[in-house]
Length: 258
Image 1 (spheres, helix red, strand yellow):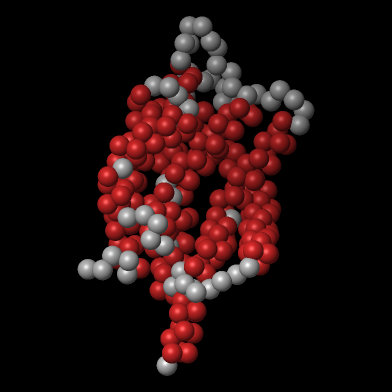
Image 2 (image 1 turned 120 degrees about the vertical axis):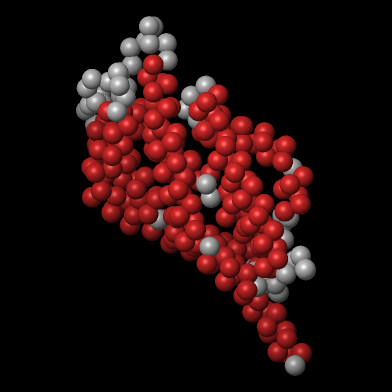
């Protein structure tokens, strides 16, 4: 019986031990698979890049003061670089589930089988949250941000955006908002490991507000308070959702007994 209990404890992962070089080798394997998934996703993105480019151009064309929505290219290879930049972005989005899976599998040996089940079941939520964040940035944040940037100091500046500047700006905004929307999932996972509690997050709400303000300032392309609030509001809502998930995460892992 003692041997059986020891075996179950080993299988649960709490007593699993690996050497330093074994960890490095496993990390190398996980990174290789993650990079391979990104390469495959980018290859698929090459065939979808043209459609995505047309889609990314749409908000620019909807700006009332823009007569010609064709973006300017300043160098001979600019259009090719932009095309493959968009393909890479598509590849990154498509590879999110596999990259997340490899990351989680690298840390899963430290979890019990029950905790592993909860974490693995949360993988689809990673993609879902990322898509929701991208959709929020696309439909809610992008229109007022572009309108503000295009009309700011219009009596002094004549906006004529380059394709590289515009596409880089749009893809960066969409990507980081997608990443920000995965905050609750990250907190849920670390709560399963007992690294954070709901009470701690509640007590640190002031730090959360400051952090959301800083993140909004970095993510938001404009300096006006309206657009910053459009980013801050969902970030704080995600923080509140994180508190709820952390509460249930600790209950599921048995750390907080009822």
